[in-house]
Image (tube, rainbow, N blue to C red):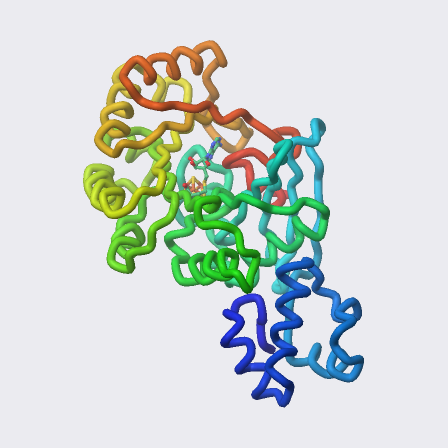
Length: 340
Ligand code: SAH
Ligand code: SF4
């Protein structure tokens, strides 16, 4: 089977020609898929019936077994639970704004990084997603009536541990032949996998990056994020600094607040030092609690004080409001469907 979504149009044309069709058949299929979000062959009315009947046994478009959606009570977020062709589950979430929709996509089924505050980590690692499975998440959101303008790789998985497939998907999403979503509107979030960041540098791949800090202090970080032992934050900071010096895209430090673990004044000062060194903005996220996660969120008043403290240290800071919590669609809550 040919997975059309995983290929650039030029490659797909070659594949289609090798099957005995004219190259423009590939262009027509790409237009249905990427410009109209249509993956049902019978709706591709500018292809002849005989082409539609024969090509579908060679070419796969959307390859999901099932898609279930759960709207949040306040309609600000919609979670999709996708059953992959092998029966495994992944989740993605549409975050709805007035003017645009952001899709929080998954890059892996589960995650091997095992951050102690994250439900996806608790679930464990199942496998990497293929480019067509990442692109497929955009398609199902659009087919459900949410045109996607922004993408964040903040769903399940560590995107830099699935580098090839994630960037093949980003290239397709960004391409004029694909969804044509601007790179400015795509953010990749990482827990700080050094080899991945170094590869971004060597390939001169410039994207909006978010780095999940956990705690800026190496010793304290190690107890929250085991990735610290082989990917020390001091080295990650140095490499991120080099990367940021090569382009002018944004860097965000994601900071999930855990009561008594990273919310003290010394923790915040160390975070501010890192942000200043990296010329980054801080995005505060309060912990989304779960019975499988042994931490507690901070109060909103405390969160406000931390924001003010960061501001007073000269660091740009935003607060990420929890959305979709009632459907376990919020950060670090993806994976709930695996626990049932
Ligand atoms: N693996 C990547 C991207 C997915 S995680 C990474 O770690 O960056 C996306 C974000 O959710 C991360 O910033 C992470 O710190 C945050 N997060 C994880 N568990 C959370 C939880 N229980 N509550 C709030 N945020 C959480
Ligand atoms: Fe994986 Fe990110 Fe969750 Fe850590 S926070 S376990 S890297 S998904």
